Image 1 (cartoon, rainbow, N blue to C red):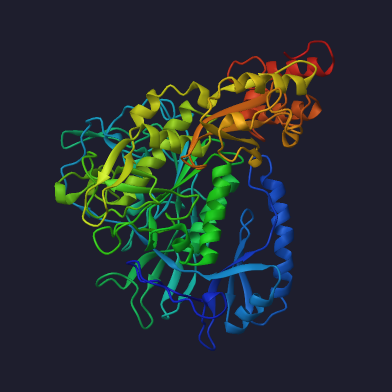
Image 2: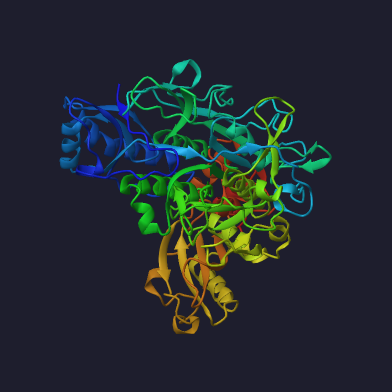
Length: 636
């Protein structure tokens, strides 16, 4: 069995010697995460299968050489991410270092689960996001149907709890077998001891030491409205569905050092490889679950104040996680991560990995009423949002479902519960703004959030937005999801005319980018707008002449930075679902597949397929495309 290097639970520092930063003792094998080189594009719901084929081809270049080695064994690989799990000794590491297809290697390691429970007064409805049902009209129907979905990557979920019953729309488990570097036994907690499962019940909450966390996390995101000790409580998206994924493994003290807390000799630990397996699975699920709004991860390790510092955790791990989160973002799925619970020590201005990754949405915690930063919350420039997480020192804590009984609730505190509050909010906002990007929704929460100054010693009055979902839902953001439909026989001329119309909406102090799908085709460089404009729309710029449909124009605030989008405009051609600039048999097939639930249309593709603008792509739209192709009735 391969040994797995354990990292001390409370933000320890990992030593990084030798090739790839790993030093394996003689005659031992460790379990490592190998990332390999590939040129696959970012994931979309339409290209997932094709990406998997290319990744498989790229992976073969590495695995063919590994199979000839006496020092390397492939344990697992992921169809959507360019990483695989390998058992290796030191000589195997040297072979990987010489392999031209290998990008990086990192030891599979543990993350701390940010957990804390105690007696508390509960969380009242008083206009605070986590404690308000102001979003009951969003995220799904009142009976829980047609719901947007939140993925909870954690210890599992008690599905029979009264506040979570009927919430599961899919589930999974990813776990490992082996030994760690101290000789302790690691056992998979998936059904039957398998290392993965999507069977019914595979995500049920585990019951050994270290378990019970995921049930509370799921509750913060989407529990049903409940009465507890006279207080009315709910998740931030009570009508959303949940996809719980259990990712812990059982560690049993059989070696030289006990990795469990306290007197426990057996406990549930979370390994990075299981998180990657879960994120990979979400990419696969997105092809059929087109309403996944967010993924929540309430775990982490160490503390960093900048992206460059964050990368020092492990270049391989940083790139692997950031790549996975970036692909999820491109699918319209936000990766929400807790900032960490060690803000009351020497970690001022620093947050944990993986919250510090660029594509993660890092969430810090306030007390349950949003009055002040929680004493324990890590906070820094890399934090994006603040949300209720509870604070026992102020007796203002959150009350969430307990894994100990179907009708029990526990008082809790932690960034673990602030993060899923935000993950649920993305489901709520997604239901109102279905065409918005993840970045747009994040910016919406930032601009509508209430300013919260961190007045704790050592934080320098750090100012971050406390989420206010009601304000975000009230925002007049029609232009955020406006679709400009092009029509007529001269598509290029129609496009330029539409862009010229948009030009009149742009005021001087803004820069802009023009994108097609996820590819940036032109960027103004954030100089005053008038210095970049010429001709009719943007037709004089050679880089835009190839644009026909699926255009996204992002406006950015001048002198603030390119990471703060101001408004976004979507430009599509009515009927052109695949964005190739014409309406033909391919579009007919796209709508047919959409109707058959084989390949859902989303974003601008759905808008393009909705010919009669009744909010869906159906047989009426299919007929209109057919008539257009036959020259009987042009689409206008």
